[in-house]
Length: 540
View 1 (cartoon, rainbow, N blue to C red):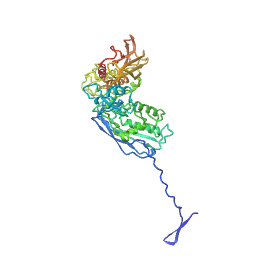
View 2: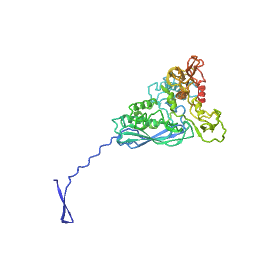
View 3: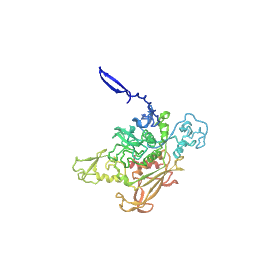
View 4: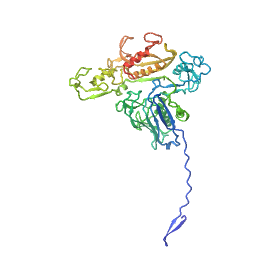
């Protein structure tokens, strides 16, 4: 028995013997908290709408371990205007030169002081990369479009990811303790990402400028809380701050237009129940990193540096000169999957008719004989089935006044579009090099919307060309849209092969030669004519 003591209560007749507890040890010092540089500090973004730029100011970093990480917010404010040359396109950053340096241009070998135009000074003809090397502006622009690195030192730091079209919002990230991420034994907890994008008005670079869009609160995504997941989080934060995570469009879940939808550029995992959008998925981290690589989002270390410290002063800012860059890529088109995507139709169902004898302007039958819809823009009414038949032909226009009521759709069979760069100069557009397009459509069976359903059609391999300059790159973006909407090819009679049931060009003109002729370059008005054709098809 240990030591005891006697405690008296009021008199010596009442006492209690109680043990004396041993002296307690002095409290031990708490373990030191390990500061980590990850994730990067939160940022507050402000926008200069007229210039289309964003400036970022870093807040104080949080010193914490990842198991104790507090909830953090990353704010993004969308600019009022995106320059057409950089919206959704990777670009190279160039800057004006104040004083003409001595020496020659490394590309053309002519003196930097030489000026090819009498209307501009020599300084106006020069441009500088972030690494400090100076070139003739026309030379470096043409060079970067073909090889996006500095011709002198090989630095690729001048290349920036595209600026996306996401509306303003807030990204929160925190830790779900005691919630392991399925499929990751080294992740005892999970990183929770929550996005808030409130209702607002669409900007000029959205599908319907001036119209309100439907926002949301607390859209969630998850990452494993391990080294790989934390690296990916840093890159996703970087993509978020460039407006690449969301866009405005038609929701595949609800079918509602003018909604905030996930961008296909940066995939997310939104559940723990498996499936294409849930964990576990052993390929997700690799696939997401590949998507970010294709967007030229730098690795996690570079992202941290650009979003913190001295580099934060220039992160998100538009450079003085921007040069859009073409990425080598292959684009699959699946006509079956395209048919499952809800059509973006700006139509309103009609239950009552002001005139009982009003007829549909397409089939000439009374509107009361079938289910009818009204084009919101012009208020003209038609049978829904009549407009749907027109939509399958890619003619989503009001038959009365020509107002558009949806996005174009074509009937091209499935295939692949590949984009590559040629080292040869595009005739008529010197010094611009050449963009090479390759279309491959294998043979198959005609669908219900083709001329002879059930009959076999012959496939094709086609090659086309564009100049690798700003006009050509912008046209390429529209041709990619046309391809993914089935508008580039159709099934019909081939004039070349003189037989039916073949894959043939649709209505969009392409240049298939570089040695002249009706279908070749040079052609000074081709880009204008092609854009006019795409305008007629209602392409954005």
